[in-house]
Amino acid sequence: MDNNNRDRNRDRDRGSDFSIGHMLLRVLISSIVLAIASFFTPGFSIDGIGSLLIAAVVIGVLNYLVQKFTGIDASPFGRGIAGFLVAAVILYATKFVVPGFHISMWGAIIGALVIGIIDAIIPGDQNVV
Image (cartoon, rainbow, N blue to C red; front, side, top):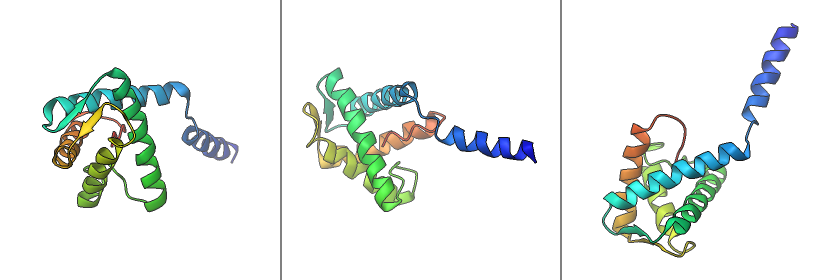
Protein backbone atom coordinates (compact mmCIF):
# COMPACT_ATOMS: atom_id res chain seq x y z
CA MET A 1 0.00 0.00 0.00
CA ASP A 2 2.86 2.34 0.73
CA ASN A 3 3.99 2.17 -2.92
CA ASN A 4 0.52 3.16 -4.13
CA ASN A 5 0.50 6.23 -1.89
CA ARG A 6 3.97 7.23 -3.10
CA ASP A 7 2.86 6.84 -6.73
CA ARG A 8 -0.24 8.99 -6.12
CA ASN A 9 1.82 11.66 -4.39
CA ARG A 10 4.41 11.64 -7.17
CA ASP A 11 1.70 12.01 -9.83
CA ARG A 12 0.03 14.82 -7.87
CA ASP A 13 3.36 16.63 -7.43
CA ARG A 14 4.21 16.24 -11.10
CA GLY A 15 1.03 18.12 -12.05
CA SER A 16 2.02 21.05 -9.85
CA ASP A 17 5.63 21.05 -11.07
CA PHE A 18 5.61 24.38 -12.88
CA SER A 19 8.89 26.25 -12.80
CA ILE A 20 10.13 29.54 -14.16
CA GLY A 21 12.31 27.61 -16.60
CA HIS A 22 9.26 25.77 -17.94
CA MET A 23 7.39 29.05 -18.33
CA LEU A 24 10.32 30.72 -20.13
CA LEU A 25 10.64 27.74 -22.47
CA ARG A 26 6.93 27.98 -23.33
CA VAL A 27 7.26 31.72 -24.05
CA LEU A 28 10.30 31.06 -26.25
CA ILE A 29 8.54 28.31 -28.22
CA SER A 30 5.41 30.46 -28.55
CA SER A 31 7.53 33.36 -29.80
CA ILE A 32 9.17 31.20 -32.45
CA VAL A 33 5.80 29.86 -33.63
CA LEU A 34 4.36 33.39 -33.74
CA ALA A 35 7.37 34.61 -35.75
CA ILE A 36 6.94 31.77 -38.25
CA ALA A 37 3.20 32.40 -38.51
CA SER A 38 3.66 36.15 -39.04
CA PHE A 39 6.24 35.45 -41.76
CA PHE A 40 3.89 33.20 -43.73
CA THR A 41 0.61 35.04 -43.07
CA PRO A 42 -0.49 38.05 -45.10
CA GLY A 43 -1.95 40.81 -42.93
CA PHE A 44 0.08 39.73 -39.89
CA SER A 45 3.31 41.43 -38.83
CA ILE A 46 5.31 41.96 -35.65
CA ASP A 47 7.65 44.96 -35.43
CA GLY A 48 10.38 43.64 -33.15
CA ILE A 49 11.56 41.02 -30.72
CA GLY A 50 10.10 42.93 -27.76
CA SER A 51 6.64 42.95 -29.33
CA LEU A 52 7.06 39.29 -30.20
CA LEU A 53 7.88 38.28 -26.62
CA ILE A 54 5.11 40.43 -25.12
CA ALA A 55 2.63 39.02 -27.65
CA ALA A 56 3.61 35.45 -26.70
CA VAL A 57 2.95 36.23 -23.03
CA VAL A 58 -0.35 38.02 -23.74
CA ILE A 59 -1.58 35.20 -25.99
CA GLY A 60 -0.62 32.67 -23.33
CA VAL A 61 -2.54 34.58 -20.66
CA LEU A 62 -5.61 35.03 -22.91
CA ASN A 63 -5.51 31.34 -23.82
CA TYR A 64 -5.36 30.42 -20.13
CA LEU A 65 -8.27 32.71 -19.25
CA VAL A 66 -10.46 31.44 -22.08
CA GLN A 67 -9.71 27.84 -21.18
CA LYS A 68 -10.35 28.47 -17.47
CA PHE A 69 -13.66 30.30 -17.89
CA THR A 70 -15.20 28.55 -20.89
CA GLY A 71 -13.47 25.18 -20.98
CA ILE A 72 -12.67 25.64 -24.67
CA ASP A 73 -9.13 24.69 -25.62
CA ALA A 74 -8.02 27.62 -27.75
CA SER A 75 -5.62 25.67 -29.93
CA PRO A 76 -6.75 25.91 -33.55
CA PHE A 77 -7.16 22.15 -33.91
CA GLY A 78 -7.85 21.48 -30.23
CA ARG A 79 -11.63 21.71 -30.29
CA GLY A 80 -12.63 21.92 -33.92
CA ILE A 81 -14.23 25.06 -35.29
CA ALA A 82 -14.79 26.55 -31.81
CA GLY A 83 -11.09 26.26 -30.92
CA PHE A 84 -10.12 27.63 -34.33
CA LEU A 85 -12.39 30.67 -33.98
CA VAL A 86 -11.30 31.32 -30.40
CA ALA A 87 -7.65 31.17 -31.53
CA ALA A 88 -8.37 33.72 -34.27
CA VAL A 89 -10.15 36.02 -31.79
CA ILE A 90 -7.25 35.76 -29.33
CA LEU A 91 -4.79 36.67 -32.09
CA TYR A 92 -6.96 39.62 -33.15
CA ALA A 93 -7.47 40.83 -29.56
CA THR A 94 -3.72 40.78 -28.95
CA LYS A 95 -3.26 43.63 -31.42
CA PHE A 96 -5.13 45.94 -29.03
CA VAL A 97 -2.81 45.11 -26.12
CA VAL A 98 0.65 44.77 -27.68
CA PRO A 99 2.23 47.72 -29.49
CA GLY A 100 3.97 46.58 -32.68
CA PHE A 101 1.64 43.60 -33.17
CA HIS A 102 -0.33 44.24 -36.38
CA ILE A 103 -2.97 41.83 -37.64
CA SER A 104 -6.11 42.11 -39.74
CA MET A 105 -9.22 39.98 -39.27
CA TRP A 106 -8.27 37.80 -42.25
CA GLY A 107 -4.71 37.70 -40.96
CA ALA A 108 -6.01 36.38 -37.64
CA ILE A 109 -8.01 33.65 -39.36
CA ILE A 110 -5.14 32.61 -41.62
CA GLY A 111 -2.69 32.99 -38.71
CA ALA A 112 -4.76 30.65 -36.55
CA LEU A 113 -4.65 28.11 -39.39
CA VAL A 114 -0.87 28.47 -39.79
CA ILE A 115 -0.33 28.19 -36.02
CA GLY A 116 -2.55 25.10 -35.96
CA ILE A 117 -0.44 23.49 -38.68
CA ILE A 118 2.77 24.35 -36.82
CA ASP A 119 1.27 22.96 -33.57
CA ALA A 120 0.46 19.74 -35.41
CA ILE A 121 4.02 19.44 -36.76
CA ILE A 122 5.91 20.29 -33.56
CA PRO A 123 5.53 17.49 -31.01
CA GLY A 124 4.67 18.30 -27.41
CA ASP A 125 2.13 20.32 -25.50
CA GLN A 126 2.97 23.89 -26.40
CA ASN A 127 -0.52 25.17 -27.38
CA VAL A 128 0.63 28.51 -28.72
CA VAL A 129 -2.81 29.89 -29.20
